[in-house]
Length: 608
Image (tube, rainbow, N blue to C red; front, side):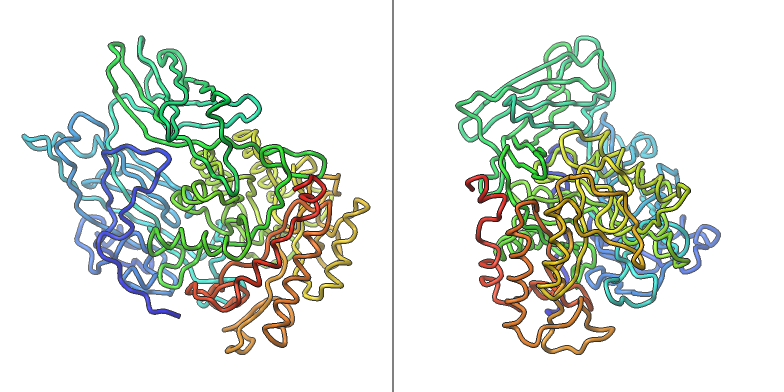
């Protein structure tokens, strides 16, 4: 593994939200005062009002070597502190403090005034800190001190993703993340401002639908949107902003300028959204982009822009040896997508965390298909083992993720949960309620994409759009026998101790959304420090043969719309990646690519 290098300050300097860009923003990444609060007694001990003992490099969590702390033990709470200077040019505007993500229970003070709280470790949140800043100096400049407390107890119900509840990682569980782990930034917005838009492509109508929230409805004001491409303006629309909390606009794309977004041709239109006052003066302006793309279901097929595209997905868990859940650089995000494409995959399940928006931005511009997911693994009511138990924050965070990421064309499906286990019984459980609630939330927020209730194991929503299974059988003949039942409407389903745990399959599109996981570490010994699924191949040649056989079974099944291979990279002790954890090569990637390159059955049947 390569040794991590400490990035120059400030790290991760790029704008964290490229699909909703204002020019007046300021990164708060860099060195903050920091202190571990082992017993969560910091309030009583005055940590909120005094200087902190250590220094940390934000946005890296204290568990990450890049943070400068590199602490792997459980931390009940952590504290951050830094001074901020608000530019004089921002006078008269609201100042927003954004957090990409902070794990888990966050409280923020500005000059000892509490400005907000947020619960959940995976999703973004924003606090308006204007009133806590005070009047400022004679030139309009304002300074303040920001203090952040993040509590992250090892006990109690919460979504943990793949964060181990033991001190050390083992098997498919890894290290933890505490506190700030995505970019923190300030943004200036006018007193009346545009909210985050919902951009809905309409391929059949050759248009985009926009819903643009406005913070206050002023008589005579309007919202205007302009769509553009490399040749200039494509479409323009405006509507009154005075009578609707979320004015709606339609941008019609002429046939001569129509170009779809998809793998191989990820065309993005430029989009500018402006708020105009009654005199026509620009009050607020956002730079964005949009992709004209559709997702549809036809029988057992999932169509992209009206055609079957076999989804050759790879499981991407987004861990890094030096940053843990945080990519060390923006280039690292791009490199992961490019590495996946080079191996023959056309997309990924974004697994066990809500990926940062810049990853989705790069997926949008590179034509990379992704499933938006949540950081849950193994909610289980079948045993007394409490790996993860759901609570209200599951639904709340899921809604936050759906709201933030709705407009990204690269997202072609939603999946809130992963490998839940509910035994069929004569009662409805809390997990049943949460599963259905998260599925309904996705369907209510987004009518344009298919939604899976849970990936693998306990399917509990009969009307879910997609059905799937996880099967890590390593013998290709046995794997083929497992998958053969799909031909007569009885596909492979996961069970618990041989007992059914899902509602019956009803003919939905089906895919094997986790398989493979081939353990390969020629320099390692199976055990706690080196783990993978099933029997390791006797040699590298056997690995290629097994990979080709397993993927071939799914590619050649005319009722299979895709698959997801485990996984893109090794992750800590889990050694089943196409690449090593440090992203270096351990396999002949060209051979992996060739095994997936031929048209799948659904593509052949459609003449693809």
